Image 1 (cartoon, helix red, strand yellow):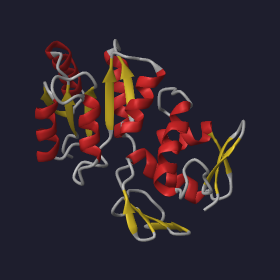
Image 2: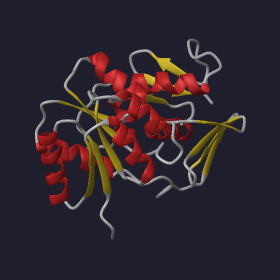
Image 3: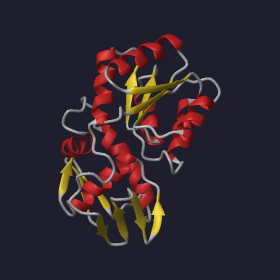
Length: 232
């Protein structure tokens, strides 16, 4: 089996060398870039199983690069881990809003980094292990084979987590799902503990794409003190 490929974009040459060495020792095929522009060229020219982005990059910063990756058909569904020296809630939410699947605050241990990478790699590849090829609810349709989402047959761009989140809701229509349940089923049981605001952020972003009026949602309703319910 071919080694899974990881792209690291980080301007600290010592840190990027340490991360690359650890990942290669763990059996991954690693490519590196020291600036955002080079990282963008590499992300478009090859297929990766994971991309690791530093937020503070010279030239094209990590937030802008993450947006470019998410808006490119060839890389839209590649998992992204963002590295940030700024650990405030606002910074974390900004990274998640941009489309990142996880964030790691500097300084961090190499053990934690490898565990976060492993958690992403253990997630099923698009379309694998699903019991059906398609889900529908009203004018929403999820195509699992192509990993695409449609609203009234017009494609809507969803990040990996948004796609998985909507699939979870559509499979549990009218059921109240707690934030813990959503974290476990979308981010995984072996995932590092995350702020439950992560769920709120992704649902807010998902509402912007599937609701007629995101400020007064009719599809995904909030159940105060418990979680959320998808009503179709």
